[in-house]
Image (cartoon, rainbow, N blue to C red; front, side, top):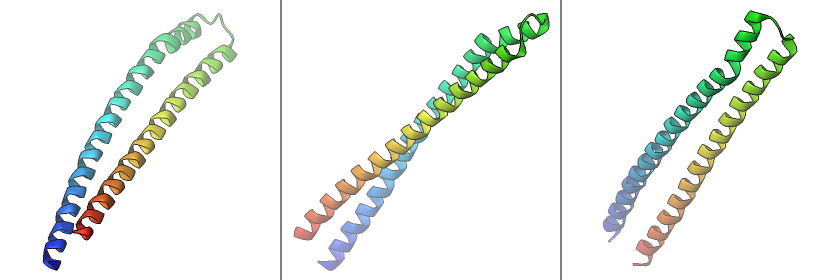
Length: 114
């Protein structure tokens, strides 16, 4: 009986490990997707904002203040994007762990009762 319970617990641990790996893979896939989105948005920003800056610098018609403001806007944009992604990742991990803990505690309670 005790050996059975130990075996069940070991199998639970392996299941937990597998679920964790799957969760990690899902999170990593999301991270890769987010990185692709960031890179593409950065490229967009480069094309839309930095090209005109280069043209303006070449033609030298505009004060440097406007260029600096544009660069600051780009930096803020990228930082906000990264912060949103980090928060997203943290939330996903926390929710995954809570669900796992809930699931495991339910299973363990059921096995202990039997």
